[in-house]
Figure 1 (spheres, one colour):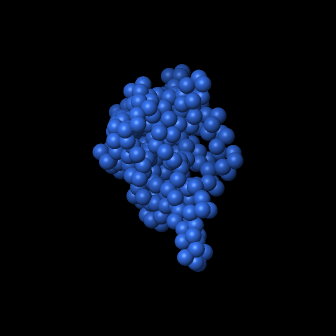
Figure 2 (tube, helix red, strand yellow):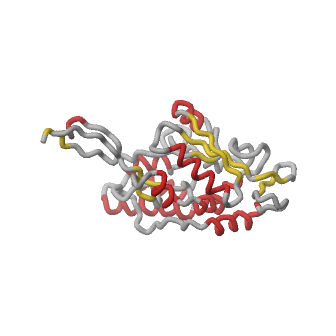
Figure 3 (cartoon, one colour):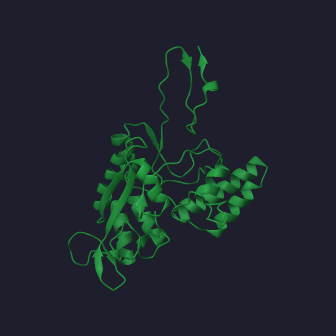
Length: 266
């Protein structure tokens, strides 16, 4: 989600103020998404509803974090309280523009259509859910070879993507640490999330050898980023599905890597 450009965010009407600079607006979108329904109806149960970026098997997963409740009425009220109410009575929330006008709260959701399980369908479901709270959402689903370069260039306001977590330090440095001029941190922090306290916790964890202390530092960073700042809107953890021939003993890995040496004859 773009929360670094006050104006000119590419998935909003031209000249409209970007509401997502405010964590409350990000929380409203989060609360408008019925992830239980997505997992059940679109994923066919082949996923687990997520509460945070890291899955329970990873260091830094915090059991304290609970998913914000699905509450479309509450989500709309948050946006109305922020000043984005429907003043002309046409059913759509409104955004202020640079020149003092108000325009319908239109939002483009970008997604790949060939990278994740049911990715385009998930985006369509999210758009439908956002329309129910007064956001005029539409979907731009394109092949991954087009999608990822566009996202890297910042051509988005809200997009759907996944992350195959390896070690948690790498994930936190890449996705939650602010970008630095040398390109060492925040490599995939496309929305330019920045919280100095989170940066400091991640850096301290990266230089901490004690696993218990390191886990506690990462959990603290995750709690600030996901609950206080709503840095990301978690959807679900996809099941890793693999076809295995008869006579072969093999279990897929949570990081999606395929190692031939891990397959054995029964």
